[in-house]
Length: 110
Image 1: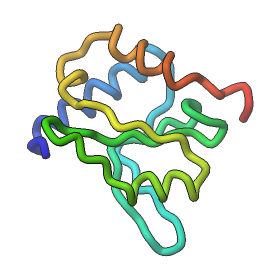
Image 2: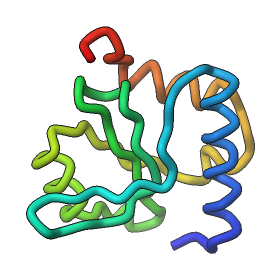
Image 3: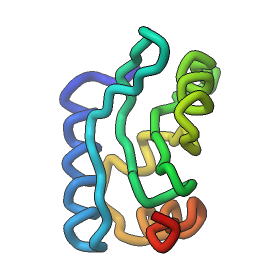
Image 4: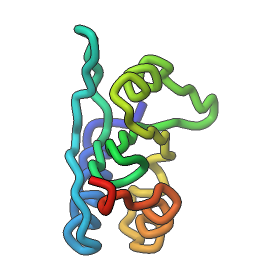
């Protein structure tokens, strides 16, 4: 897991991107279902699915994915994506645009 200062920098970059590219993000986000809750990196309410999506990190070299997050996302009808945080440590607008384009904007369906 990355240090808190690194995660804070990545969060700042996502928040900056949201202002610059005009999308909504809740960062960090607490996902809940049936009395279970888990903190994830972020929630994008208009991307990934009509119910939005959650984002959390996946770290090399083992690229472990937390299945509890996947199960909570499915129960809430959210799309989910695990991203390599290193890609977002330095602000590069193209990286954010590429991710958002891949996930798809579902604002019109809300």
